[in-house]
Image (cartoon, rainbow over all chains, first blue to last red):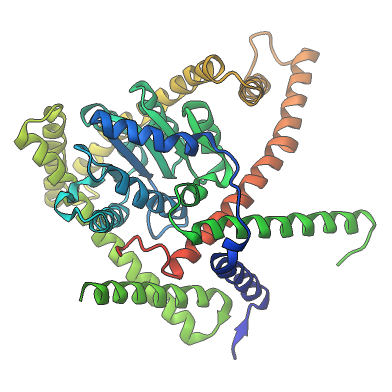
Length: 249
Length: 211
């Protein structure tokens, strides 16, 4: 006997259809991205760091690849592919850190691919992708030394963080670095709002690929998110009205 | 040849991801078993990756010590602590009092100190936020944080005054109506973003395992 979750399959197909549809035909309707201060100023900050011979650091957080908290770090890896390309020719190329061994390996692979695309494979150093510490606080305890000794002037946090994320952002602020920070946890976002100069709120951490022009599928993702969000809000409103009128479904 | 190799990785990732996802929507013995096998493989691979991550950690700090770069003594301490912990763990076992003592008397106090540092950092960050990013949202943020703190913690004047009760009620209203409503909106947005990030990897559009 085979059981099907028809609603789940329908929702999945809706997501897939919208994503592929917008990626294929989205260029017919030009898209205007709203201004996010952090992403607006990120390219300038990276260019300044490259010219000054300073380091860009991207933290993928303390989540694991196989955990439910991997999504923001995977979005961070999409950002990394663009950031790595921008710093390929710098004396101090981007360094990526994670609290999970598998995530550090993915960071190394992403970096290797970015260097190959830039025809600079010989400049790739495997230790540019590092695991700092397997627990949240051992990870964050290693950050101040890394930030000060590596001369980090652009400190990006895109991954899963708990309360330790606030410390991670604060260490960058103490170094007077450009600190752009986003995560998936709502409470940690509140902490990052206070500590980081450029906090990413809500799902903005997932929009990094679209803002950094990683590819058409990233723009399509944003359109799909907005479309499904409107649908969900409409359903919530309809449900509220029906419930107020005493109609039970 | 290089292209073919990357295609193999992409195909393996897509097929594995497809069957794991299918297991959530289709209730069939074969698919469920396959999903469980794939997840177990992933857990095993993650454990191996942890080992590689630790090796990577050691090699980074070893190169810092050997090249005597700035801050190398910290790296030397890390390598020493790593080796001591590893040797003690291998000799006495992970459940021995010696191994547990390392966590109880070194790691836990250090992590608790960092947690304490966090509270100070947040207080300073609150003041910095108001002085540096002086816009409406920041003022609302800090004002709300102060109200919630006042409404949550005990007062020196005691908890009998009507003003204390009023602040407590305002705090509850803020937390239960505005904060939980906002948090649900954020969680909804994060969920949508997470789903689409997963789908991009499932479609092999994003390939963090290399191009």
